[in-house]
Length: 414
Image (cartoon, one colour):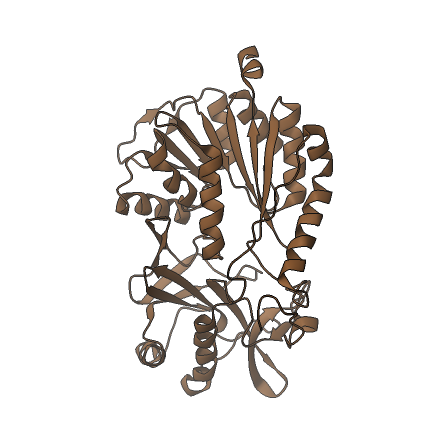
């Protein structure tokens, strides 16, 4: 299958539901995605007298996902299958060799499936709540010409009989696996990963190289799944933010601090705000290993922190071992990358009250982006540009970057 050919040969197209555009040529997909974004953001564009930029397509739209997840289940006769949940259901579609997923990662999961009977590991059953193996997750990173693979076995209980032999067996087949982790998920939940990780082999994380920096990826870390498109996306963020050496930048919803870390060398100070403690831990580690001294990470809900900061409340610096508090300088640039649900009115109101000259909004959902932009506009901001990025070829999803500015007259009114 090539990027310019239709892909009716995908045997899971009608069963899976994950790739809405798998039967279209790639160029046609890009046109449809841009049309959808133009439609959803039409009122914003008309009020701001702007046009959506050309969508930034992928140079490598096949096998791009560096995070591959499989649900394990048993079907009639006790046959083990692995794949994904059918759209809007908990029925597992047996999948091998998805066109979106890293090919080696897929083969690793297939080998895990092959080894299960010989080690007498039982697959988890959602109905009876019995069995051991629930999910398998493989994450991939690239540093120079070297690739690292993380294997995560999500189990319902802690005991792992024959662990050392299993680790040896899977690594004999795939020596590029640099770490193996057992994640414990004993809850009745749709979440894949639980809170506890047990390192079976290696360091418990892998490292990826992005725009000249190295980033640690743990099992629970958020990290963009399309490496080639991520470089384009972050480069555009840096271009639009265009910070000066004296600027203070806030990176809200920062995750493991990738965007803020990539921006740090261009500005004076960066403050990353993130609620997930594991992500903050990784962010602090990443900053240290890259010798970035002008970035600090604060573990807090982005809305709560922004509201408190706007109300002139001192904020703890959690990247410092001393329990001191300090007031941050007035921000010059705000980077925000909220979840699919978008930001909150409280966050936008607080950010607008800070009179921040420039905001770069990274969105994975054009509907919530449209809603949030309308609120910013009411607060005296102007939308200068919107650039779509195809981070997820063959699916209906698309990310966008919006540049929002408040002109000097509006700022002076404050």
